[in-house]
Amino acid sequence: MVAEFEKVAHEAAESGEALTADSMTKMYHDIFQKYHGPALVLDGHLDLCWARIPHFYRSFYVYQYATSYAASISLVKGITTGNKKQRKEKQEAFLTFLAAGESDYPIEVLKDAGVDMTSPDPIQDCLEQFDEIVTQMEKLIGK
Image (cartoon, rainbow, N blue to C red; front, side):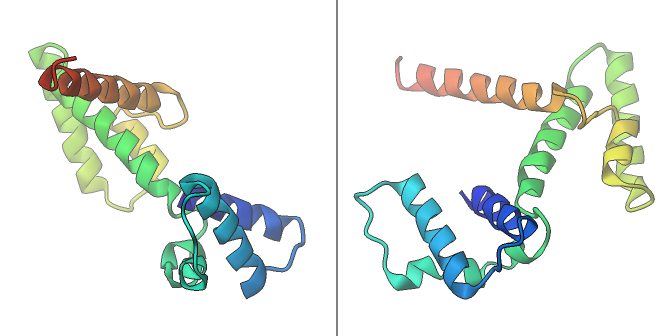
């Protein structure tokens, strides 16, 4: 929801629309209502939540949560799967990744660690892990 709000706000700015308190409040209200449905009654205070969230003042900050989660899952998969030699190589690449800090763009540092965020692989890894978790939950509840 917040990612969509951020996207819509950026699109409005890019199209030349002025981002005023009123327009941002309406955008936030409409998206909040979309996600929570008509049964939720929104008051004016909730409509102003966009103003207190500092993420919105950095370009597409909320997307970093999803991309870092996907990268992390791929990194873990790399160091926990494969034969012993492959796991050891991935562990060494992971330690090099950690040591790299801000020496290069994050996408390049991740590539060096074996995670290509320009490919669909990290998202596929997330979906596979999600499927595993759902399967485990279903077993626990007897489905």
